[in-house]
Image (cartoon, rainbow, N blue to C red; front, side, top):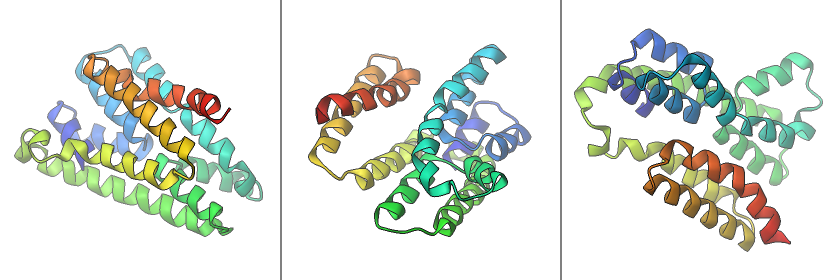
Length: 199
C-alpha cells in the first residue's frame, strides 16, 4: 500500500503503478524507480539501478538451488518470478527447520504477490487522501518488514554483529544524504562483514 501511495503522489499514472507491481514485483526496486522517474532520470539509469538493486536475487536463488533443483525448468522459472526477500526468508526458515515441501515456498510467495498487487491498488485509491505518508508512519512499513526478516534470520552472535554494523552503515549513509545508496551499500558490504566477523 505504501508503494501505491508514494507512486501516486510522485505523479505516476495508476496504470503505470499497477504494471510496475505486476511486472517488477520488487519493493526496493520499485521505490527506487519511482524516485528516479520523479527526478526525470534517463531510462538507462533507471534500468541499471533496478538491475543493480536486484542482483541480490541471484545470491538468494543460488542459496535455494539445492531445494529447487528437482523442479522442471518451468517450475524453477516460476519460483524465480516470485522470489523476494520475504519469500526467501520464509523458505530458508522452513528448510532450516527440516521442511522439504516446496508447496510452502510457492504458497507464501504467490500469496505475497497477490497481496502486494491488491495493496498497490489500495494505495493508489487512497494516495491523494493520505497526504504525507510519514504522518501515519506508513513510510516505515518497508523498514519494519526488513527488521522482521533480520530478526528471524539471526542464529548466532556473529549474526547480530553483522546486522548492527550493516544498519550503522545504512543509517550513516542515509543521515549523510546518500539514502538512495544506503541500503544497497550496506547489503553489498554485509557478506564481507560476515566473512571478517566469522574468521
